[in-house]
Image (cartoon, rainbow, N blue to C red; front, side):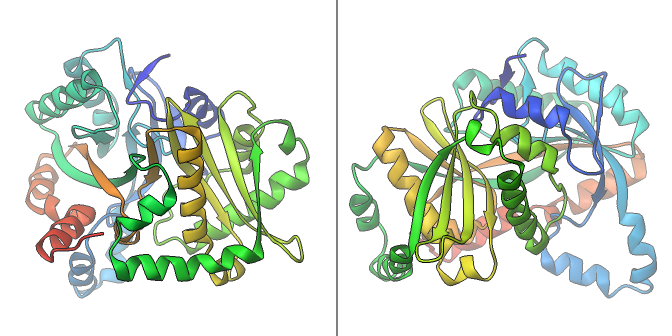
Length: 358
């Protein structure tokens, strides 16, 4: 099916359908991908709100009730929810409300774009109409995460660096000195990953990053990575980082060249060695160099670390989630406290108020 809001190759959704994250199950009855998964209600809560809850009596006992089985419309492998081209926003909202919205305490249409500069006007209009339809049908609208991107409107990385403040430019150049100690290879997805040992090595580094993450919502499986790494037709390219002297694998970064943009999708890092050579910052520059070389229009840099990405000159576009709460009393509480679950928006407001600039 041709989905709206597509930034990645459609095959990525097909691989996710065949190999769901651990503990996830795909559902039917809705004209869009929908899955069930355990969900900690405090996943996106701001730190102050979580600290307030933690001080309440017997929090350690009753906090387990904050983790519930939830239905989600969307995927965890796409930046935006894949929405149908052949169902109206009103029909989609109603199908979720009367389907998983009745079977689950929570049903969430996740990652709805908000006037994204990365999408066409038709997809943005559909997203706006979907949010309006959800609000009219009793959903609670919650601000989502900040998707980072860099327009490739510069002819070289030197021109890009010149746009950063002097202090940030100097700091970044200092971090990039470690590049001299690295061997960087471009490995297209496909036959290069036929060997199980290579897939195993990549998956071990992904798992290390996942284990260190603050959020453990979706743990992707080895089967999923084997499928995406061996997909020769997806436009995927892995930037592989090895120690120049020893050949040791320090990290990798899977990106997709899709619709004239470079989409940064997955990363694996060997800690602490990757941190010692500033691989996060090196890979950022390598990706920008590739995008310039290929004449691409955007580098799409994902959801995590917005403060760091802002310092590197990224811009941001926003999403929202439409949350259907089955219980009317809890629905009223969700409306009352929704603002505490908009941590990226609070970060943006704080950065803007503080006059932060690249």
